[in-house]
Amino acid sequence: SNLFFIDLDFNELTGTIPVELYRLRGLNELDLNNNRLTGVLDTRIGSLRELEFFQIHNNTISGTVPTEIGNLRRLVTFTLHNNTITGEMPTEVCALRTDFFLRFLHADCAGLDPNIQCAFPACCSTCK
Image 1 (cartoon, rainbow, N blue to C red):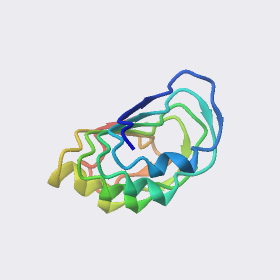
Image 2 (image 1 turned 60 degrees about the vertical axis):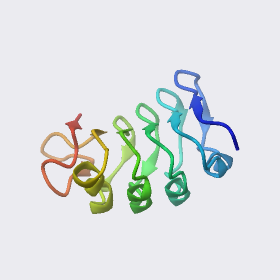
Image 3 (image 1 turned 30 degrees about the vertical axis):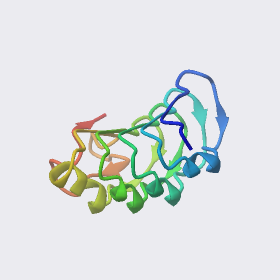
Image 4 (image 1 turned 180 degrees about the horizontal axis):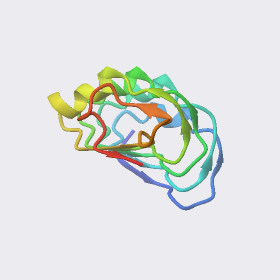
């Protein structure tokens, strides 16, 4: 596919992230923030190896962060705060902060009982 950029933020989208998006291997940017998306992050997200910007904040996505996001070696920005995602941030994702290009990792990791636990302090760039 020749589609590189999808910006669907602030569209009041509902339902789950369509699995068809994971077939867009050349996708560089996927902005789905500020909608009403539900469901979990599919492990197939790791097949989008060209992805640099992935924004899903301000939805009602649940589950955990898939380790396959660690396959996104070009990822610069990943925002997932203000969802109901829980668990530990995978070390594979944290490694993108130290070994590759991931500069902005925004998650619900603040407070005494955070939804997401970061494996080490430098993992998440911003805890909300």
